[in-house]
Image 1: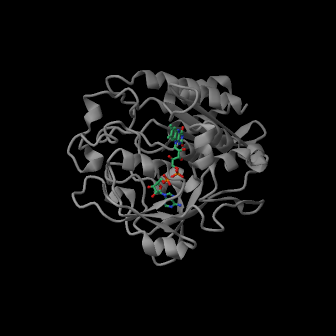
Image 2: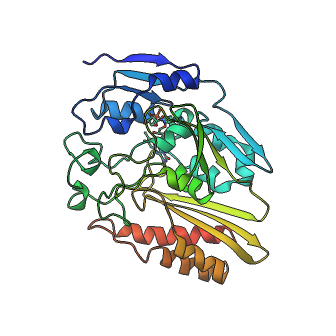
Image 3: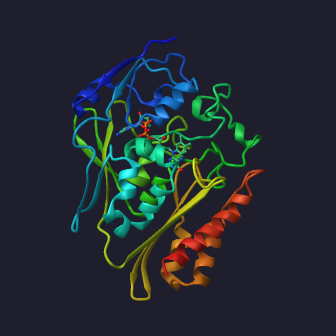
Length: 335
Ligand SMILES: Cc1cc2nc3c(=O)[nH]c(=O)nc-3n(C[C@H](O)[C@H](O)[C@H](O)COP(=O)(O)OP(=O)(O)OC[C@H]3O[C@@H](n4cnc5c(N)ncnc54)[C@H](O)[C@@H]3O)c2cc1C
């Protein structure tokens, strides 16, 4: 059995100095050594148990001071540190009141025990739960192989949009709410510089690079996620459907964020999770609400429009109907 050493980072600089790989640098590579970041450790340990990664060193960033704070400034908005747990986000009163979609997304994720351990940074950077990706016996596109096994295989939980190459879905349902809320991911680069990236630019779709799902490079660390201020005119909602009510990732999830001016919808953001390999904005559906207002009739129209380009696989056509139902319901919840 391979020996693994443990490094307890007490500062960001220490963690960056020690960590010379990301999880993606191990997958499908013959030479697999290096030191990776661990926060809550749920996905890191699962990938190790699945035999997909075998790091020499684990760099624990869970106890670095200062990354576990939630703060709100009416002008700047919300900032959530990367080491804040999903439970802490779920229990934050300001988030419950002002960012209902995020509160609901977090509260519906995983289980209470998992939410106690899961950190926001780790949640965003977790890898897909596609069972072919998670199987060491299947050298799929994401692991340097040449085919997506799900295409001709067991694809009932896979993507129904943008699924021409890899048809996995992104595992983080928290990311769905963050996308609709226009979040930014704050990253410290290897040379110590801070950059702020719009969350839609944080995800890497498989046609760009199938070997990774996010832009993080070795030594780069998420320090926080920021969300613009939420005014009184903002309404949001989130719905997740799964095969089980708990202890499972999303089969389909949706976050809706509307800016209202009286009865007029000034702007609409509809984000879909578990529809495609990365979370997606349903822009044509958003236009329906902005142009025609928000009502049960336009909610149904927007849901239909959101699914008009769906390309389901042999066994997951049922997900289209689920998406239509939850998109409609989530919009109606904002009325
Ligand atoms: C049964 C089950 C059901 C689940 N259901 C859901 C669900 O419905 N919705 C959902 O969203 N999630 C779900 N999860 C995921 C879970 O909630 C965790 O968020 C996730 O597994 C990883 O969080 P973590 O903090 O343990 O990350 P870790 O395992 O520590 O890290 C995950 C990855 O992120 C990297 N990383 C960690 N922190 C940082 C950082 N600050 N900067 C850069 N890289 C970093 C690590 O190197 C690793 O690659 C589920 C998990 C399980 C086991």
